[in-house]
Every structure is written in C-alpha cells, then in structure tokens.
Image 1 (cartoon, rainbow, N blue to C red):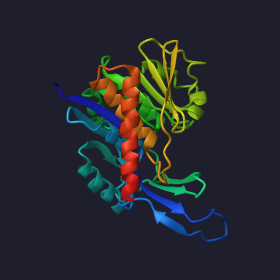
Image 2 (image 1 turned 30 degrees about the vertical axis):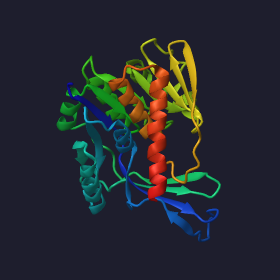
Image 3 (image 1 turned 120 degrees about the vertical axis):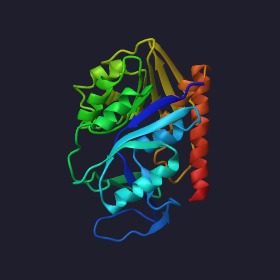
Image 4 (image 1 turned 90 degrees about the horizontal axis):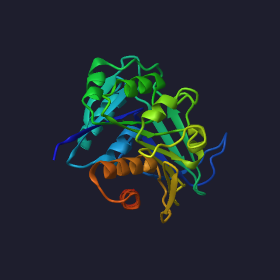
Length: 286
C-alpha cells in the first residue's frame, strides 16, 4: 500500500495542565491538587493532537507550525522528535518565544486557558513549508495564522484532500473570508458552539461529497452529509483532563476515512473508541 502523506498545520505550544483544590479567585492563593501530566510540560497545540489520532504505519504525518529559538522551543523540538512525525515544516522564528498554554481545571469540571502566543507576528510560509504542502495527499488545517491558512489551501494540488478542524476564533478564521476554504474541504470538524460561527449548513450548504462532524460535548456527534443528518451517541466520560480530545478525535476520524471502507457510523464509533482509550489511559498515567 502506498504511503499517504498528510500535513497538519496550526499553532503549537507547550501545555501546563492542573487541577485546582478550590475556586480560582483574584487576590488569593488556590492550591493545585494535581499536576495532570507525567510529562511537564506536555506537547500542545492542535497539530500534535490531530497527529496522535492519525498515527498509523501507512501514514506519513508532517507538522507545519512555528516556534521560537529559546530553550523552551528546543524542549518542544526534542519532545516532537519522539512522536514519529516529520518536523521539517516547523519553522524557528528568531524573535519568537515558545508559545505556552496553561490549562486550569476546577473541581466542578469547568476550565480556563491562559495562552502566551510567543510575542511576535508569524511570517509567511517558507519555501520548505510550501514544498511540503505540494507533496501532501491530505492537508488538515487547525487554528493558526489566517494568512498562512489561506495560502496553504490555495497552494495544494487539485487532487489533495482538505480537512478542517475548526475553532471559533475570528482572527484565525475570519467569518467573512472562510467561504472558499469551506468549499474546498472534504471533512470539517467543529463543536456545537462553533457551528454557528462556521455558518454550516445555514450559510454554507453541504455537498453530497462533503462531511461535517459536530461534536456534542462528549455525548456523541452529529454528522451532516449533503441533506442527510445523523446523530451518533457516545458514553460520556468523567475525566480530569480533556485537553486535545476534540483534535485527537478529528485525527482518528480522518484516519478512518483514509483507510477504511466501512459505514459512516462504524467510522464514528471507531473514532470514539480510540479517543476514549486515549483519555482513559492518560487518566491512569496522571
């Protein structure tokens, strides 16, 4: 079987994830009850979580992203090299710090995120990154700098398949400019809240050869194919760290569509199962 090349593009970060012992309040100290990762900090950003879901011997996974030249960026690269993905498309930007994300989980299950983007504007795609895009059989776009996102889906070959893991971020996906990207996509992922920003199917109709998957906060997912709508239930999990779950799920489902000829429902069930296994394993390891 021919090795299939898939590029996953978007912001990268190092993540620090914690559980709190009580409510986080201003002008006070709240104890951390648990640091949620055996790897501190942990690889973060949508591209690595999508890549973890995609992992398969028949897939060549390439990450296209941007980091800095500080010691934290070196740490990120050392960690990414252990993941079995091609990292030649990760550009080091001299004026940039390694982006950092702090995920804070409260006792009631709510969470907050603090994000340091690294302190610089992102450069245009490099020649190395553009060549990587031209060699790709699939491109998966995640949240990232819009000018580069737009350039990427405009640069890929006509036969290259495009998947979108959408986030309701106006800077990353300007609502008045995303129509061409949506039209080019074969697979689109978002959650119920993000579907309104995306404007599907109200503003942008779904073709018969296009699939929209809308996750429902761990309860399952709606799948739209043309005028058809399906809802597939999933057993909700009680976990303390859901970071990356939606991106990992998207990666597993993209993999199912690349590799499997089974029904839409069977592919969804398989993606749910793989995501559940990842989350349960991580819960044990914490």
